[in-house]
Length: 536
Image (cartoon, one colour):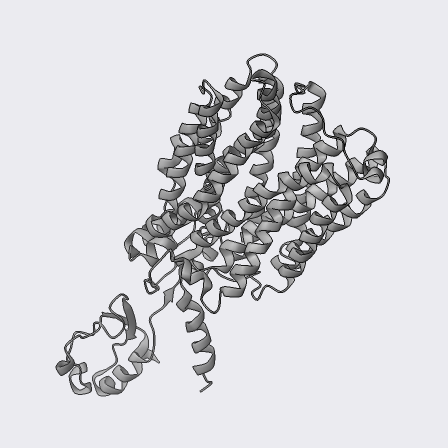
């Protein structure tokens, strides 16, 4: 055993000359390149005494030098100062996204009165934002997979800031419509902040950490309502639009600190840059960098939508599209239903009569302080939903957590079919919104976990695009169909979430405790290792 006390490391690449690659010449060669051209492999040799040199050399080739993966490094670093910084920075982008979305429910009634807009033009202000998001979500995902998560996120947030600020100067309705559509185009890339953030997290804390960053969405929504309560009575909607860009402006100013994902750098062959990022994380967290060499993954083509429909991901992709659609359809639906059901007057008359008489499209009513307070209370429902998910996400898993949220939403919708008082109506809507918002955040967690680094951003982008289809459809259900039949409207939301809950349970992969995959080859390698490794 003393002969192995001083291990030596030999780095090698594949010997490309077939005439010089025979077994007899191998010992005499520089031991480079015995693996693929894109990888740097290492073996451990030894310095034995002269009598056992040949036997020791052969045994040394069987021993691999200590290597580590990015997952190993992140697990060793834990959740520390670096992760807190990136949480706050990506959280700013989430706050900005939330404020730009929440402002839609405040801007409509104001412009309806100030510019005397008919109802369909007011609705179009909201629709163009969702159209822009739907058109751009896959594009931003493709950009992030090809050029980097940092690049994609910085460009989209700069885009949101520029056009969000510009929309506050819109002179007429047409200009406002175009500028808000461009804001929506930028918002389509905001979910990439979750992709970037997730790639810096250790597996054992990833669930809770992404749920915590989701709290920034709720914070942004609450902050927008409070800002409107302060700004709208005195300064008006233009100042509200301008001041709502503050979080994105702060993000753009601080984005120079934001690092690129080491997983992306490694996959694109920038191993030195990936290693420098890991050293930076270790330094800020006060941890040591793992010993040995970092294992590199083979580089594949990135950002191709056909990869989402490869055999191992096809079922997952289709089921996630259904789940994201149901989340957006139901989340924005319950937000719209809240206003519609409260404005209808006596709740018993609404649910039993199953019809709401339409009012004049030119009828104008400014939002009052009481309206803002009611909006604030319903927005606060986001926090209990996150709390419930935080308690169960790492206990029952991602799939069951999503299913739980969908089924609880259905249970809370069922009492609305009966004649219940306004207080009970408020309570059930509050609980329903809490669970559907929690389920949405679980989908944001599960999607980056289940897809590999090579197409993770594209997967999140396409799912986000599908969810925008649900966002576009739900106003016609929660507002138009509701005026014909309340029971049919509620059945649509209940049935959609019931199907989505079942889809959550039959997802083929549970990601609880599972490391992030770097490429589609990782799973194949794992399977081959399992089947070919035998005990000696």
